[in-house]
Length: 328
Picture 1 (cartoon, helix red, strand yellow):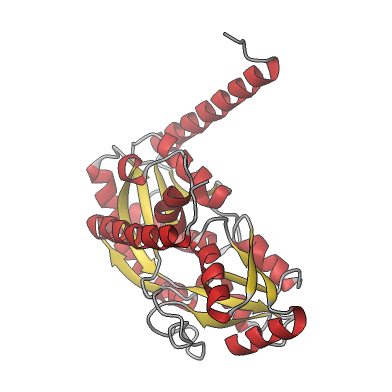
Picture 2 (cartoon, rainbow, N blue to C red):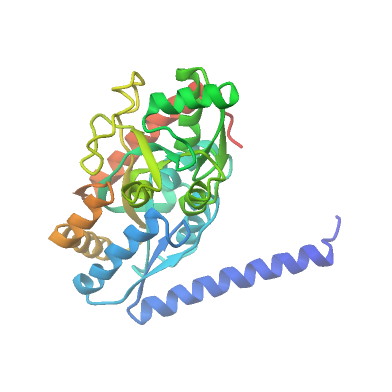
């Protein structure tokens, strides 16, 4: 049998030490009363802001420190793997939207986790919609103007940023291109924050992401949201039409935000955290802030969130299969 090289052995040892440090950190924090709330995207993005909004109030509701820990990369895959590796002692939770939990297992052959066996749903707290936004470099103020501009500038060719590869936004790029007979290419980023930074710098002319990712810059006039998915217009963007209004139906099932824990976490810890989430999202100041970010706030208990996740994954499994996409 071939012996591993020195570099391979070093990498294996480094990975083992990193995992050991991670587990020990989780154990120490749990014993000290500190709860970690993992986030799979960089600081400054919509998911990070949402997590910090909740963590600030969860601290009071639980009577213990709740710290947000960003473990960004691979569309939340790194954070999900960290959750799986964490002690199931009620000291670590994961705040995530649909991409990591429902979509990644459909598009990645070996994601390193299985939501059905490795995680337990704790609480859902909001739904949201994805949207198409254009940068300030484009003169378009509507979807039709964006389509016309692309046809005039580059014979219908255009690049559209997406927060992660093989994500719902990437599949939407393909669907929108087919609908409007455009040659659109998805440009994957490592989260919404760097994608929006390139949009603000006019490095890319359009992007698809969640309304919470776009809302502040849209209100500031730095980018323009021209269409949203979902079955109805958004309260935070009443003048922006839905894609269904524009003739692109079939995407009315909206994504969700939820909190998950490692499988095996004591039921008492799950119920305690879930009840704290219910109290926090009912606070007027929290409800108002999340709504202003483009979320539809609504508490879901553990079983409700689990049922929603399964239904959402089933819907997108069909869409992904019909697209011809092969898991990478």
